Image (cartoon, rainbow, N blue to C red; front, side, top):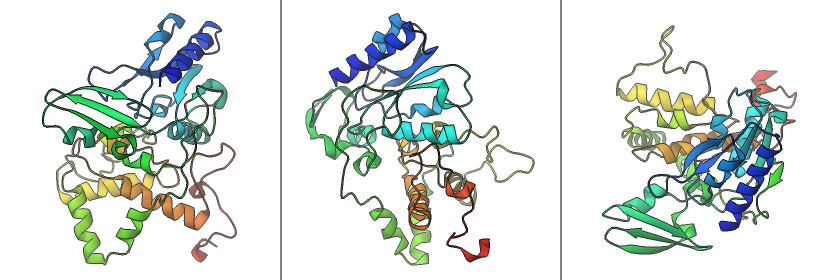
Amino acid sequence: MLSYINNIREISERILKEGLVDMVIGFHQGTVPMMNEPCIIKHARDANRLVWDSNCGINLANYLTNRKEKIGVIAKGCDARNIIVHITENKITRDQLYIIGVPCKGMLDRHKIALLFEKEITKVVENDDDIIVKGSDAEKIFARHDVMQPNCVVCIHRNPVVYDELAAEPVEEQKDVDRYEDVRRIEAMAPAEKWIFFNDLLTLCIRCYACRNVCPLCFCPTCFVDDSSPQWLGKSQDPVDVRTFHFLRAFHCAGRCTDCGACERACPVGINMRLLTKKLEKDCLEKFEWTPGLSVEQRRPLDTYRPDDPDDFIR
């Protein structure tokens, strides 16, 4: 990862010095292990603050919405795809951006690692294939693949699809990955089984809205959960309100979600709400041959009409 960091710093320093951008959005070292934090630097001398490793899972596209400056942004594969979604939805323009593409080898699942230690984790060291995790009471070595975020395990777009400059050589994309095995398992359930499954899935939700706040697609001026004229749903822990929030938010992401994993990563109680957006992603792929965030030239299926749309009622 050292070569990544050096190149990111060199590129960021150069484009700030040359006045190509007003700022660079990237990551600096977090105050606790496995939690690097987004940061904005505006001066070339601050480029040495930037870092990169497998703890940069936050999607930086979330920080671009409606900005007017010229911006340099560090973008791994899913970030770059979300940037394309932002461009097609007129939240930012392509000529405002200098995209520093970072081929990604997968982000660490901090929740999973933390559960394997009884006490506080004090340090994480990563090599090419191994992750060394040191706690106050133990030290363990993990194979990278075994402790990656679930979305990274099935990612097939590790390299940025749009960039102005790459910080490293492209990595090999994963092949023969079954992205929707978990979705098909739920689809095969009887209705009563599905009801129990989703009740169990969402019963832990505390309505903190971390999933919404971290999602790069949730940029409505007023979220439907906060609207009072009309009021769409209550603020209580009523199971109907909880389900309504998660299902409606997922539908708002239909044809847009890149499965960056930000929602699941941010959830403090570990809800796998990606199952909802992955189902919609699967439907868009099968019905419309659509994968979001691959081209600034194409509009998503819900934005367009095709004479050969598969549903007859549209005609």
